[in-house]
Length: 182
Ligand SMILES: O=P(O)(O)OC[C@H]1O[C@H](OP(=O)(O)OP(=O)(O)O)[C@H](O)[C@@H]1O
Ligand SMILES: Nc1nc2[nH]cnc2c(=O)[nH]1
Image (cartoon, rainbow, N blue to C red; front, side):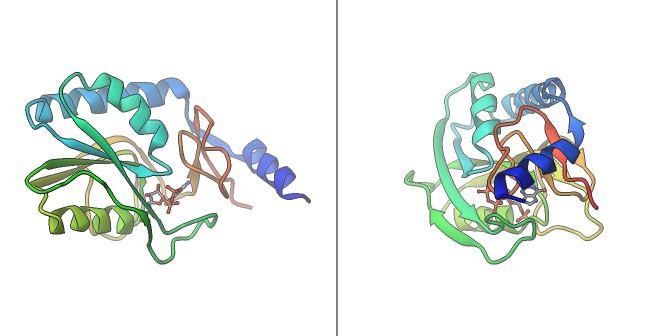
């Protein structure tokens, strides 16, 4: 089997968890709550690359108040479906000192990535840090951080679509899928 035929087979066999319309409604709900809380906060929104590109790009046009956008690129999964060590590839250029920071990510799984980025922001003087995630995974154990804004909740399965990858592929899908276990 070639890599591409494996990638295509994974999509064919996957279970669709959320339609594009459900994702859209979830992002609208998040935007409404974030606006109610932070319309006067002059926040820096940090898009956590790569996975959050899609949700950030769809959330921002729904936030009708002054904000700045920057990004941070931290990865611990690479092309794997199990997390490893954190790799910091890019840190924000914006001075975070005294700022309200909104972290936006695609999925909160074990919470290691977001907890590390939250700590980074606080160490760099952020006044407050809040977390928005498109999907929060239900795990049996407590996580080192919790999300303030959650679009959707899913079971503990590997998911892809809407910015989330399967071995680097399928971030482009409008729906959210779970890999089918053998
Ligand atoms: O809660 P955790 O268990 O730490 O996992 C969540 C992180 O994993 C994914 O990033 P990944 O390392 O796959 O990089 P990517 O965004 O480039 O896909 C995802 O985008 C989150 O940032
Ligand atoms: N694409 C993807 N990335 C993740 N990072 C942590 N959990 C997941 C997941 O379920 N899917």
